[in-house]
Length: 400
Image 1: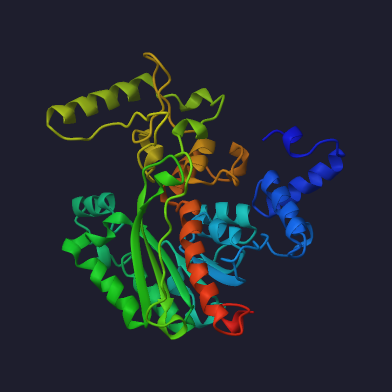
Image 2: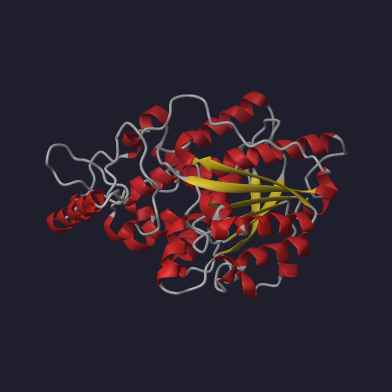
């Protein structure tokens, strides 16, 4: 939003100061100001201008102070969502050096590396364990790729599949009251539906009550993106029936793809003549064979296909029409960020500290923050009900 709609008739120095504060809080200037006004209106606490916390704790009834850890953090989709809900991140782990670079640029701290090399007992106490654990061994594309290479997948994949059990080890050591996990939809059908029972029973054996649901992010961002969310509650804290319910889709108009587009995208994102001819020929070949493979020309008033980590190769799954016989183009990095729900973090190419190739991989592997926020808000509502039955204060007394 242009400056004149956000602030009027104020000194430039003051405006620059507010910009720096909003950026440090990882919210837009308008959201920062709205939060400030809301606190004043409600009389509910200290102004965010003077908060030490990275984000203002909202005053509605679904919020309680909490601390969380961000495992397999990527570029911080979980962190963005949980900080919006008032959480404080106390530990982060991400092994990919390029994702570490982006995470540090955005959040101000560099994630620790390989989770297998971290002593679980040294991880700080926390209320919520958040983890988008590696999905490639369980995804449709990942399984196909590993099969073609003669490699193991799922739990037999030593590099990635067994990392779920590493989560279990941390859970056993730290006993966080709530777990929020995310993975690909194919997790439940993987290995002839044998993988999911192992995951669920492993969590239940740790005395957690397990809820799961596949959610399509298209109700939050203009992208068809189905992911399974697994929310678990410590039965020793919440009992055998926490009463958790996954969120209903948000009300209001559905997101439209055209809303994430830049007004003047760089021409470098237009497909070359050679690549466009190749994609057309490839699609025609598979259509003739009765297959559904091919590029995805996006309906500007609808939603796109799922953005994948391979988008940097040819951009074929999400192409943007340019009218008539003009060659389509790929998403710009700013548009890719918006499509995933990271619009507050990326307003210009300069906000991304890695190459286009690495950035597309990072967005394709990310979780949609708005979906996490909705799922976590419901979990916090359960926590509020539990606190109402006790003396309250926080989810886990030792973290306060």
